Amino acid sequence: MGGSAALIIGIAVLIVILVILFFTFIPVGLWITAYFSGVKISIGTLIGMRLRRVVPSKIVNPLIKATKAGLTIEVDKLEAHYLAGGNVNTLVDALIAAQRANIPLEFERAAAIDLAGRDVLEAVQVSVNPKVIETPQIAAVAKDGIEVIAKARVTVRANIERLVGGAGEETIIARVGEGIVTTVGSSNSHKAVLENPDSISQTVLDKGLDSGTAFEILSIDIADVDIGRNIGAKLQAEQAEADKRIAQAKAEERRAMAVAREQEMKAEVQAMKAKVVEAEAEVPLAIAHALREGNIGVIDYYNMKNILADTEMRSSISKLTEDEVNDED
Image (cartoon, rainbow, N blue to C red; front, side, top):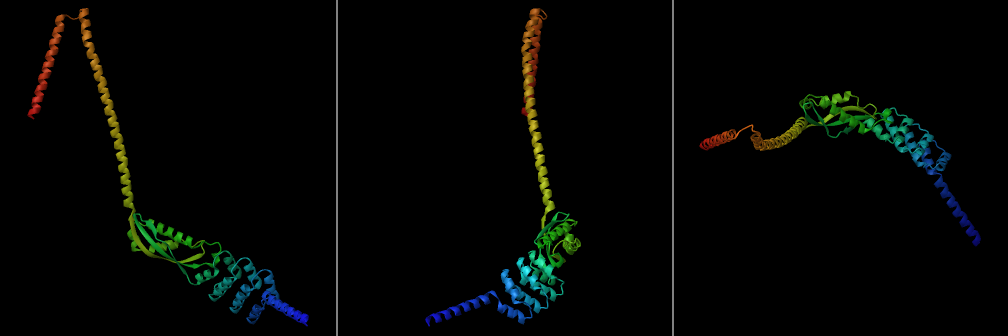
């Protein structure tokens, strides 16, 4: 009796374990939900998902959502998208949103957008409700040298056709900034920009800045325009300061050359004086030689001495007269 009871208990436990494993491996509850939701999917398909390591709920629940919305999507496509690393739930939500907004969006294109790393649901929402991108403060200089600081708001709409491979918001901001700088830079005066900031918007729009991007620019509005620095005056002041330094350097160079030339002339004067002294030292020798040779006599020598003494006296008197005149002045 005891052995039979143990056997019955063992069989019951085994049956319970098998039932638990059955309902764990085969999502019967999910199949029932899908059946009553109008989604035709077999138990074998769900078992195959388990074998392919696909979570059945992540395929069946979005499929139920799509069916209720009136979309016809094959289970194999959703499963392939899941295995490729895509977000099935977001993909289905995007398809439903596109259908409600009458936006032509095929499953393959939506899957490609999702696998490219973009939020396909957000793209559809931006396509329905345009998005506003605000640029940072952009500084540009008009021809009169005044800096103009502008900030723009760009209203864009997602372009479903160019979402794959198209540039993002950073490119839009960079191109708008380039357009603002070009427009302000071509203006003759900053006053013209302040009087008519819409000219910036119109010029930037005419450039077709949304080419090759994932967005379509609807409008560009200048949100704020401020006056910055006087770049022209600053550059002129810096140029004048640079010219001044160059002139000072050249003047210093000329002064140094003049000083060097002055020193050279002083040295030349000293050299000439030395030659004069040397020449004067030879005079007595020449006189002695002339006396020895008989070219001059003693009387001639004394007459020459008298002439020299008379010359020195006249020079002394002239100097004294000049000093007295200076003292009287």
